Length: 60
Image (cartoon, rainbow, N blue to C red; front, side, top):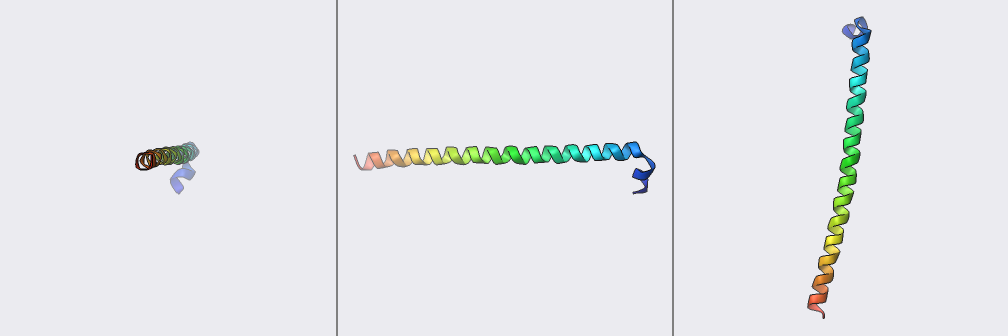
């Protein structure tokens, strides 16, 4: 990495870019996990509603 050693400004920018990318990727993963939890809770809610309706329909 002789090029980065010759240009401390470029290496600082590289570190900043890498940190920014890592932070954005981490935020994306966190958002996706939250979204997945939301979707799973919604589907569980829908499924329990459908099951209750089916039970009420078949066994009045």
